[in-house]
Length: 202
Image (tube, rainbow, N blue to C red; front, side, top):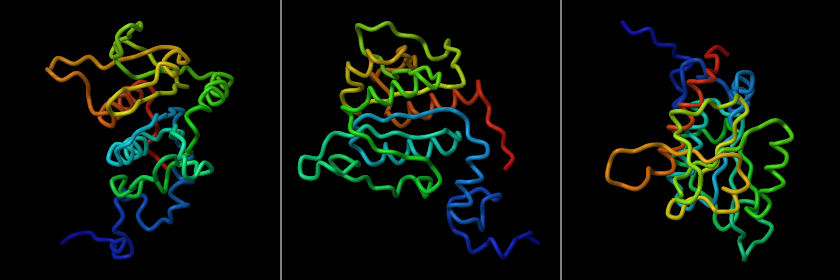
């Protein structure tokens, strides 16, 4: 005989058992009690799948906040979500429990200055030739770490790489040049969390 809690059985959201029956606000408040200090920054991502998956990754590893750096929308210059809104379906609801903000990409320096003032180290995640590259498996991340991820096709902008403190890359032994950006994000988030575990209790 199954031990089924009928009260929570009607909650079809993709949630762990501890969160069933809680409102979105209650879930966010519970997560806020145990979040780590990791910050994710996504520059000009154009594919909804990658945006949604990165949000889902970030939730899985209890990051502090997600920042979208967006290109301007010439038709709606006051729209913080930039050139187009994103389809959140792939995030399976995780967007409701995360601290997500949207900023113009040209305003990145203000954000970087703020994070540096808080004691953060900013990592550009890319494998662009011409820069000093650091193998991610050999890097000890400080608890206060910001990870920058770039556009799917062209990677990070040079300005962001130069403004970051260090460039890290994920070593690969296969034939393709790079990992999907949302996969790379998941790898980095997992490696960071292995060094700075987040408590599981709420």
